[in-house]
Length: 247
Length: 275
Image 1: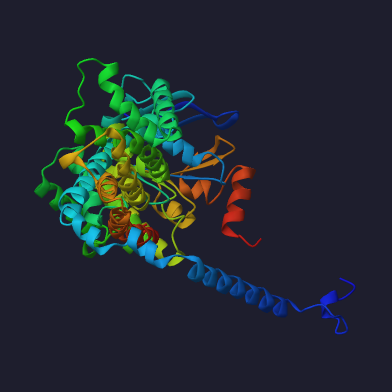
Image 2: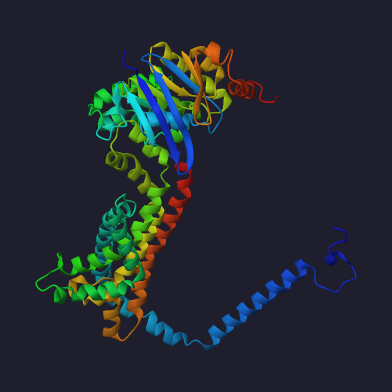
């Protein structure tokens, strides 16, 4: 079986600063993999290497068997199959929610206006913001914006989805709405790679949890093991800090 | 601190800060009053009115003031502005290009055309046919005026656009690219529209600048149906040996520039709310 995502010996430097120090990892179709770890551990960089928003310094990235780090590959075509959700939502502020979800369908997939709108409305309804089609991003709450961003990615019918700390910029009471949508996606069998600090979500939804620290994968396994019974001292220390923030 | 501020000591003869402020303000009013008295006493009001506000002469300016002069000023300005807008956007994109020579060309152009007096550019345009035999600026006199304003305006507008393009967060491009848009598509669909929205207020100010600079068309040696406000006022002033037409032209400029200035600051105020 071809892996949905495969990373081989991935290294990334920012100048002198080595952020990724040889990552090997796979995500299989239909799997939900959560990447956890302290800030600065390289989790977001790893995620951004998958669709080449960051160019790896060394190593290879395969998406559905295609090497995306190959200079000859059509990266735009690869990205079409990978949905991405950002911490800061990154909705287009000059377009309504509906237009945000339609624009890439129209310009990238060359879908007709009618079809794009139908798909957009479906997806906005699916993530629970169907009533906000005509709102500009600035008129929406963070939770609503993030759900529009998820709808925007889903409207492209991606094979897999990347989530880069999707709830970290949200007010606490809005986190649940976004996690509910993500949980629904997982149940539908979407392949998901999720960088997150939400341990409850990772424990309940993920098929695998990857703990990163200092640019390496420290621990990789089922949630019950990595979160429930971590083998490594670093994982234990991190989880303790996250689960008991006041010591 | 150990000891109290000295001004708080009651026995001192120095003025308190509030007293001092009152005295300063009083002095300012006295100076103003003296200046007004001097103007009223020494200005020759009759002569001033005769030379700068002579109604008969002002009447001579109508209706050509609006139907010819203002109309031409607007043609030169709008034409130059459109030229500057398109060329300026191109320069800004070159300025931010990954291709080094494009950056150089844009920087050199911007520095030269912002560094030179606009008047010099206009003077050079009049010599173009000499430098390039057989060359004619398309559009004749209008074309020359528009070219001069456009070349100068583009250099300033390029810097306005550059600031706007750089103010669009990087996440916008990333979101567009992650949806499969090409770099060009992302610029056109996502970045440039936002940049243009952001630069509307400074661009309005640029328009006002160009409107004023359109007076330099005077130096192209235009005549007849091509004259704009400054040339029009100047010609009439010479004809009547009276400065009233220049005043009239000046007021006509203000009728356009002041509302535009207010518009720019209102747009500036609204910008904060849209993002």
